Length: 75
Image (tube, rainbow, N blue to C red; front, side, top):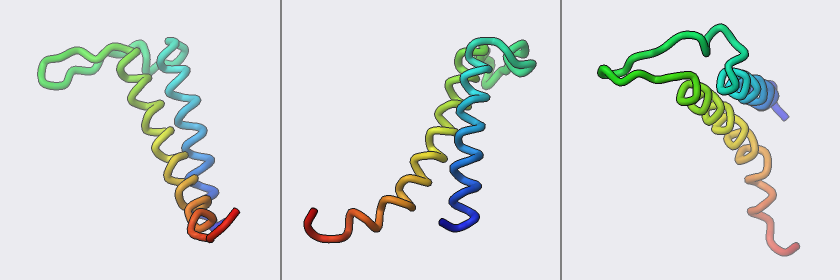
């Protein structure tokens, strides 16, 4: 594995954990309200967005690592 792939996996896991903590209200970020086009985003929307960003990073890692294994023929 390349250093970039290790970084992608580690940062993805950390971002997912931070998203869960934000969703449950255990971080300083969850005590703030964000406004986009006049719509208030509370802690649940912010936490889910952060969590999905982490999931995207982990899925990108898995595609890079497991992708070549699916190109081989047979079982």
